[in-house]
View (tube, rainbow, N blue to C red):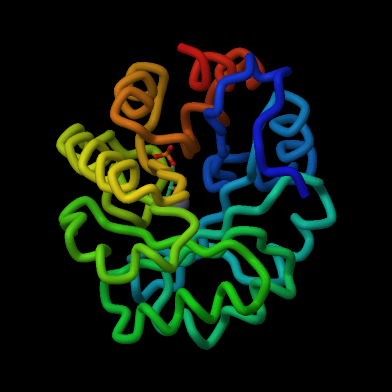
Length: 227
Ligand code: DX5
Ligand code: ZN
């Protein structure tokens, strides 16, 4: 599958990943088709277990149904304890990117390399309070660095601007070391935060409320990507 954005998106290498956490779950298939048609590059799926974060969403079965609704890559963000127990299940369900949090993971290097051997892209997620330096020992193993700009658990929270320095630090490190790692930012990304996030160096923007609570998905996706 081609993961690069095409010229129809203005030729910019910025990808927009709507988070379905904010979608109307009564019409999930329609919502997904609508964002796909509106120019989304990935579909961001938030998996929460009520332990790692104080909220519960859905598991591999629902991911599998979503796989049947779209051809877009599925960006699966695991906010669960013991992610190792479920990696195969999410890959079988159709994940294209599988991202795991650094926090609380005792064997992060093993988890990240296992995701790769399962044949999908891996990513490491840092909460707002986690410094970039902690991911350096495993950075050579990852495809994607996901920097949270809210504390995980809920959609519709306010963007935390202090993470912009972390995005810049990560971007500089990745560039200086000639690494091929995408930087994704997740949480409270709306039209006003998007510009700063891109300026700081992120190439994938997750947006839940900003997309699904807007009336015109195409307009907001364009705005987030190009504004
Ligand atoms: C928060 C999730 C986010 C969230 C983003 O725990 O990881 O993906 O759904 O939604 P907004 O853009 O509304 O903050
Ligand atoms: Zn997320």
